[in-house]
Structure formats: C-alpha cells, structure tokens
Length: 500
Image 1: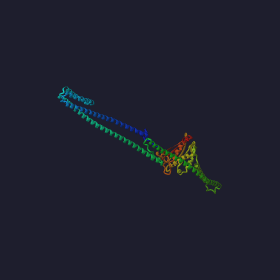
Image 2: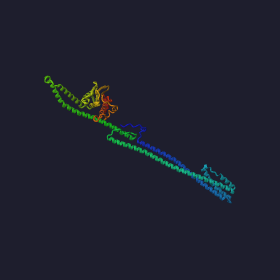
Image 3: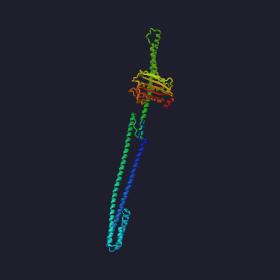
C-alpha cells in the first residue's frame, strides 16, 4: 500500500499543476503591473524635467528678445544723444522703451522669483522726458546698460540651469532604461529558474514512475516510491504505489487459493492411492487373519502340537494393519467442498490419529483434550482438514531439535457462548515479537530452505477469514506457542464472510 504523504505545510493545499500554472501567471502579471507602475512614475518625473527644460528654453528666448530690445534702446539713445530734433529723438526712444517694457513684463510674469524691476530705467526716462540734456541722456544710457548686463547674467544662469536639467534628464532616462532592463532580466531569470526546476522535477518523477512501471511488469513488489508532491503527478505515484500493493495482495491471495486447490488435488490423489492400497492390502490381511484364526482353533484342539504357535499375535497385528488402512482410507477419502455442519472433534481425532505415524512425533506426546459436548460448527470439511494439518505440522516443526524433558502437543476444544475455541499448544522453540508480528504474512518463514513455503499460517488465516472466524497466536521464546482458533456456531457468519 502507498504510504501516507509526509507532513508538509503545503500538503493541505494539494495544488494541481493547473493551479501552480495559474499562480505563476498571477505572479507574472503582478510583477508586470509593478514594473508598469514604476515606468509610469518615472515617465511622470521625466515629463516634469522635460517641461522644465522647455520652460527654460522659452524663457531664454524671451531674454534674448528683451536683450535685443535693450540693445535697440541703447543704440537709439546713442543715435539721438546729440540730435538737433530732440522731440523726434524722444519719440523713438519712448517707442523702444515701450517694446522693452513689454518684454520685461513677459519676463516678470515667467520669472517672478527673480524680482525683475525697471524702476531705475523708468525714472531715468522720466528725467530725460522733462530735460533731454546730454547729461540726462547719459544717465538713461547707464540704466539701459545696467539692464542689459542684468539680462545677460540672468540668461547665463538660465543656460546653466538648463544644462543641469538636460544632464539630469539624460541620467534619469538612462537609469529608467537600465532599471527596466534589469527588472526584466531578473523576471526572466526567476521565471526560467522556476520553470526549469518544475520541469526538471517533473521529468525526474516521471522517469522514476516509468522505471517503476517497468519494474512492476517484471515482478517488482517492494517498497513504494516516496510521494513528495501533491499534484496530479503525486496522485499518479500514489496510485501506482497502491497498484503495487493491490497486485501483491492479489497475487498472494491467488497463491493461497492455489495452495488450497493443490491440497484438494493432492488429497484426491492420495485418496485414490489409499483406496487401491487398502484394497490390495486388505485381501492378504484378511487371508492372514483367517489363517491365524484357523491356527488358533487347531491350537485349542491339539495344544501339544501347536504349543509354540502364537496365532493371537498374528491376528492382533493383522487387526492393527486393518485399522491403519481404514484410517488412511478415511482421511484420504474425498471430502465435501461445500459448507456444512461439521464435527470438529471427529476431524481432530481422525487427523491426529494419522499424523501420529510421523517420525517427528515418535518422542512427542500428542494430547487430546476435547469437549464431549462440543456443538457442530459450520464450514468446509476439506479446508478444516487443511487448517488442522498446518497447525499440527507447525507444532511438530517447533519441537524439532528442541530438547525438553516432556515434549508435547496439546489439542483442546471448548464451547464459549456462540463460538467454539480450538487450541493447539506446544512447548517448542517459541517466537520473538518481531517474528510473531509477521506470522500471517504470505511467504514469511523462519524454516530452512526446502522445509517450508511460508504459506501455512497465511493459509490458516485465509481459511478462518472465509469461515467468519478468527485465529490468534501467543508465543514466548524458549517456552512454546499457543494458537487459538475461534469458529462461529451458525452459518450466518460464514455467509456474511462469503457474500454471493
């Protein structure tokens, strides 16, 4: 049978391969969403830098226009500082001033943090408007030059700021590209590692499963494959392990049934042989018995002539031979294979009387302690004979080579409520706990090669299971073994154990 899966915190989920695939897909989607959010965030930052660069370029363009307007105003002042028509010169200067003031207003609106002011220039222009003298013109020219220099310095600062923004924009874009590349490569590497490990393990498990399937075809019935996964492949491995256990159990059951069949065939052959032998031996025995009786009669008539004759001894031995042939014939005669009510005591007497001729019982006392009021049991006669023979053979084997003062095998029967108890006890070698725990396993034996198949007690267990009864064994090393068999008294238990 397949072993239970090992304790594992993941075992409760028992994820299928499809579920694992869905989990990997969900993780991949979540990873993609994280990367998408990262890219969106970085894109917003890059757009902010780009807009600031555009703003700087537009501001620089306005500064250039303001600088040009300032230059035109300066040139106009230079052109009209000594002009004879002061009024016309002032109009031209005022026109350039108006353009310059418009440019300055645009710059002030775009660069409020710089606090741009034309107060000095406006004051100088008002002075020139009231008194367009050369001195006042020079003052206006100085203010214009100061304004032009200020605009030039501001333009220089804006260019430096734009260069910094451009460098930062390039660094950020390169960083985003590199980070995205590394995240993508990490995702691919992780995905490749997960997929590689999954398929490597899947291939390994399927290869082990394929090898085990071939081993099963070739007769392997050993330890199962450890179940280390809980998906469809793990279920398949567990199913194959279960199949091995089922095949092993079924094969052992078939061997037990085959052993029963062989026993029936063997008993039929022995019965036919015994009947023939009994018939062939019976005639000479009858003749010898008749001669012995005639000698005995003559001895009575002429005691002196037959003084040394022992016809009664010949007659006694012929009677013994006749009894033995009858026992063999009765034991080996075909028995019913259908269930019926049986006399357990009669079966025990018949089997034990025949088995006494086994040479292993020459020094062993075979005791019968049978309940004279024992009721009939319901079962199959042939299988009951098999059961008794196997138990007695095991008891004789346990006493073989055992040097005790009074080696004995005791067979006892008792009626207990709705059951009949059969006890077979010996004072042989006994068994330790490890051996006792495996006595009912098919093919398990402690006997040397050629002396046992390991099917005896397994066959007994099978017979009692089929009869709706039970068999229990108690054993102590160096003290002996007691086998207790319980038979039901009615046919209900047998029918329940053998449903049609």
